[in-house]
Length: 192
Ligand code: GDP
Image (cartoon, rainbow, N blue to C red; front, side, top):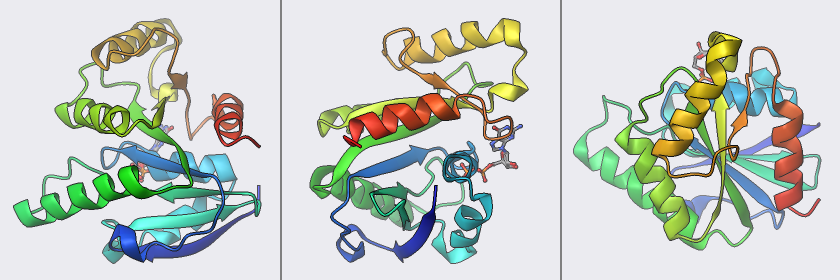
């Protein structure tokens, strides 16, 4: 894949419109979202460098293979945010979910080790479905869970998010597991 960083935007209205089918990536901060995007596009450094300290609370837009787009949404559940910052973040994400015409699906990134799902993750699922968006759960860092425990962890996570068993894609940015499956699900929802 050939990906290009296009822009960082502090609000939805400042996010450029590329006219390409788009995938948004959401998840708690530190869950492994940027590593997973980096692994998908095969350019780990591109995503990392777009994340300068001032940009972690922004929408970061990438053009991929000139045919689709990825948006790295700000990580949620970040303890150091003030009440006002939290509110701003909620508005930004709600606007994006409600108004982004080219948005095809949201990848919700979850941690394979955390069998107890956070309230923020449950709220994220509610928001995505409330706005009628397609949700693609991606359970990452699976390399950190022994193979004989993975299925159990995945089923526990799916259950708490009220998603059918087998709906999540199990993956790892480190080992590359699940990359093909995630890629093909995303190209499918984008009609590519
Ligand atoms: P973000 O804040 O959600 O974008 O998280 P990052 O992608 O920056 O990752 C947070 C930390 O988890 C970093 O130290 C990564 O190296 C590590 N990490 C991310 N993905 C994986 C993975 O699949 N396996 C392992 N073992 N570590 C990972």
